[in-house]
Image (tube, rainbow, N blue to C red; front, side, top):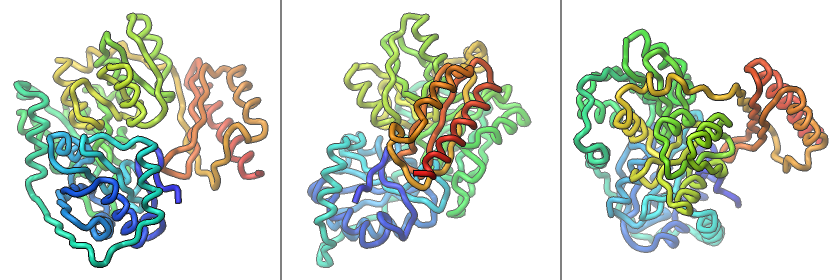
Length: 422
């Protein structure tokens, strides 16, 4: 069974690959992969999280340490701090509450390679749950404090005494940690969506719906807004005027003369403006793992995605939404002013559900439809399937917003109908 997508394993609790027996088999395969030693768990606030931890832990056997509700990057940071042989984050990130998933992290805090994921899947297909396995599961309450300490160390000597900051925690994994780190650094904090009930994670809030925090920032007279997603690895900023600043804007703000890694989804304006300043720019595939791979190859420090997955120089092995926000505040005394002249090219991203995912190059007429979109005013067209959801993403950049909207929706309608006819 193919389990891993762009960012771990996703699905619905109780259905393969997230049913009890498959998770126990996966746990056995992961123990074989990681070897002996403590394996750490964190989870977001979905109601299925505790049962998934139990199912995986039963298959793992050995020493399992449950850190409870914490952001995925907190696990990355704790592992990189020298603890454990590996870790599992139980989360479906920005997906709705009905979904859940598993993100695997190595002892280094990094995500496994595609080859390593294939090895885990291969072992999982032949693994059986050992009812006699000795399981020592410990629940540890110090994970939050460890994470806050590591975050504070990353911006040592930096304070936010003069700032009023709004933060939208998406009723997710950072509902405790995000307000607390801002308060520790001296900010006056207005936190919203910090009352998770197991079913309200990402519900009309957080990084996937930043327009709500934008209103709060203006109404409350805040200096900045920080939007996180369900597992808090994404960051979208709101300036004091209520302007939404995505990952491309953050990369432009933090730009390094060494070079910047974006993805195929990055706006053309980012590439153009970096080139105007003589800063090298490279596009990776979608997913912060692919960004991280290119950064290691190039030996650069800064990269990320428009969605707000950002890897900062000297930061954690995986992107951390709060660390990204803190690095932006540390870098700029006035983010609103420093990004006043940032203007992405007009673009529209349309996400449509598809029943199947045939290779796009085999969809009849699609290549011609894309060529026509360019002739009709599009400047860049990109189609790709989501690696975690049954969706097709259609991105069109155009000479103006109306053209981008029209062409993206038209192209999305065309390809959905073409796929349905196959």
